[in-house]
Image 1: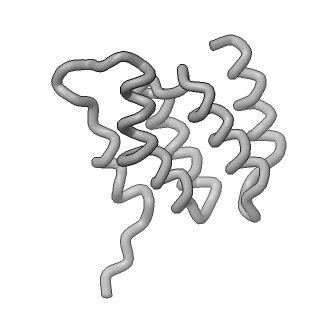
Image 2 (image 1 turned 180 degrees about the horizontal axis):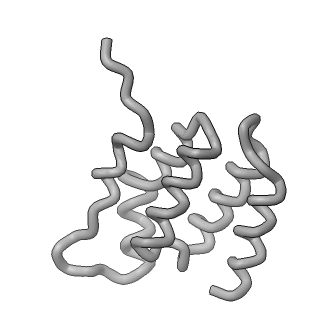
Amino acid sequence: MTRTTVLSQTHLLSLPSTPPQCSELSTRFNEQGWYPLLKRCKSMEEFKQVHAHVLKLGFFCDSFCGSNLVATCALAKWGSMEYACSIFSRLRTW
């Protein structure tokens, strides 16, 4: 059985050919992309990769996305409250 990591599944985070509105992006990728990847993170390294993709692709504009990043980082066994606070402090500027 081949083990896949969350990092090998980032192909799910590709942008569509016609860029939809932020809320439409958020809905699509909540169901298909970043959210399932976020929930499968097993380490801070994997979390930071998903966080980077979220920022790169512009999903951070959605409060659901930002709050889930903060909560996952703060509450996971492997998480970091300091890193979660740094994400939270940037939410106010978006």
